[in-house]
Length: 349
Ligand code: NAD
Ligand code: UFG
Image 1 (cartoon, rainbow, N blue to C red):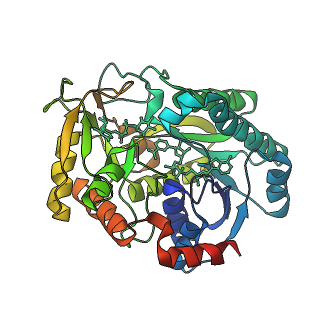
Image 2: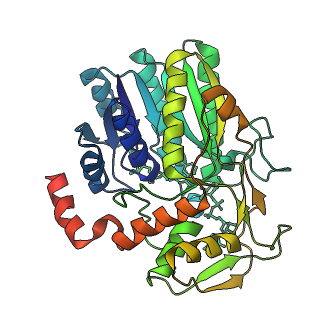
């Protein structure tokens, strides 16, 4: 069975490729490497000892994306390709709408033409906007607070409409909470461009000395210690959730949203503490004002995914911190370390 993975070179995509290959699926990766390195896919091959086709292609190039469907016998698609930086989406909204929404429309229109009706889509807990209560279940009210969030919400709505128009479709909308961690080998992980926006890569870059200190955005939320609470999930658990969702879309028609989270929230200060314990490094921090648009507390009710997909996160906060640190300490410059530059050139050749 061949699965097309769009955005497969990225953080979550590369970990999902490893799980797919290890489970015996054939994969094809389509990525334009706008936020990733071909090196990650070389490492996926190294970790699994399996080969697969890679299309260095922008999903906006509809004509060329169609060729991928012409040339391969694809059973289902896992669609990660998209831009994901909230702040950037406020600065260049048209680019975000174009990339995420037009990209998805291209993909599903081609899928329709080739009668491939099975898709697993990367949505986000951001579709819950400012949640009125936690834990958040899938039928909580939906809203968006920025262009990035609106692209996810709009794509969910588009996919719902697509199912209504043709009940042959099988669609899983996976609402991720906060993915962190890395493959336990330390060979693939999150590789942010420039200064990280997200907490865990910021913490690991402070710990390794690339950044001086962490700014904790607000300590006046109504949480146990006043700092923001999130549902951090190990990226390998998240990747495994995609395999369960894939089984679901392969075997049943319909459109369903699933929270992929642990159900457990941790505050920023708890995360710093957990990380310091496993790494033995100090993470200097100071309290700063709240980050605009941030919410105080966000964690999942993951029971629907457990009941309907048979999936449950297994890795705890300690493993998340160990693996994030292993990745960062073994690859201080992500995929652009000296050894990686040679491999990068080879991968592109
Ligand atoms: P990532 O940036 O590491 O991966 C996305 C991949 O898509 C990258 O390899 C990028 O090069 C590729 N891509 C982007 N636009 C493309 C285009 N036009 N054509 C072809 N390839 C393109 O991000 P990630 O963290 O792995 O996230 C994967 C998906 O999950 C995204 O859709 C993201 O919005 C969603 N998501 C991520 C998080 C998170 O915190 N990481 C949370 C919720 C949802
Ligand atoms: N934080 C800091 N300092 C930092 C970075 C983050 O204190 O330098 C805090 C935030 O205020 C928040 C927590 O750490 O309380 C987590 O922040 P992240 O930026 O790591 O994650 P968010 O929950 O804010 O955002 C993530 C994704 C978004 C997605 C959102 C909802 O990055 O794309 O989850 O799913 F929209």
